[in-house]
Image 1 (spheres, rainbow, N blue to C red):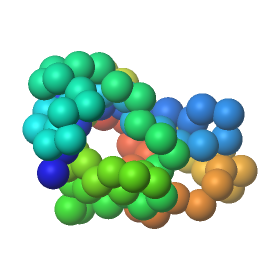
Image 2: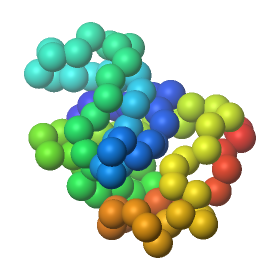
Image 3: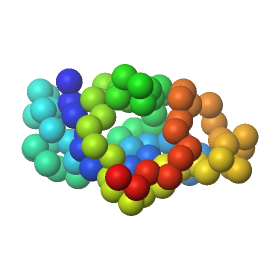
Image 4: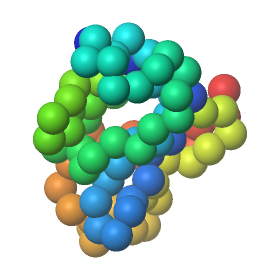
Length: 92
């Protein structure tokens, strides 16, 4: 399974995506450490550290330090449904 390190979660034109450094791409589309933008997230679980997109499954490693996961609590009702977002500030 591909692993995404130093990732951030953002909203891009109404779709939630991840941007981060990918590792272990068995399809060899990406080289280890290459910074990528995923396609739209279909499911994400912070408990299991897994994100699923249209074509890929990612093991979520360390989140980028000092970033805020989007959307904020006040905006969550206006967002498309995605499973188990963590809306707290992440400053590790």
